[in-house]
Length: 340
Ligand SMILES: [Zn+2]
Image (cartoon, rainbow, N blue to C red; front, side, top):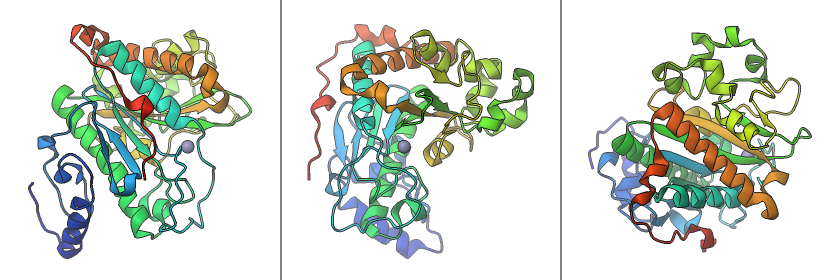
């Protein structure tokens, strides 16, 4: 582990020791990434085992290590309300995303069955009243040390996943999975572009202005693809979902949300996508809650998985289904439960 010390070195070391002694499984140093207090451990040497589950302190944050260039997270589906974390008092602009963890696991399982390899999966088990893992630490954890620690673990597991993807593949895709209850009952894909941005013509959208503020910025510049096609054409994620029968925005059918309910992507998509640099793109996926209920969840997850695999093939050049010939064993995360 390499370190360099900033003026807040003392705090950094305290944080480091606290986390290092509480992470369960794996190598504690592996999750200490991107620490704003000045500690910069060497994540390239991370030793997570693909398919194996790692937990943060008190099992609030779960990480299933992967080896595919795909990272999926579920920040809003948690149900734990431990007494040690006071309820958040502001920024409570939404309830929990029911069934978002469930479809995250179903999607992970489908990707595994399709490729013989594992996506990286990061799940927050804390209720949104205790931690909002899709906000900055100030709003998300609101001063609770236990919530702050969980917040760091959530983002460090994503950072560790990104480091693994960069090492193995050079580039990849991060998807932050949510559910919504907007009356349009559509699937919303967020590229950090607002409804106003998306209301522009293809000609207008195809400019560096919008590429630069998009969470798929790297892809926009490296593929040479027509940007509006990448965002809402038939070969886009939304295009593939529309083809499989899902009302999706943006897509060829709904190139912009107009005045309809729409989430363009939150903190995680902004932070972990390529808007601020790097070769890992980000998309926020807001499934309508009705499309991920138990009886239809598999169908949705399969469609989303197929769409992601098509996008990986078309835009990243990764034929992930061709990996399936490698031997694989039964994938267990479907039976993972909250353990306290
Ligand atoms: Zn959400």
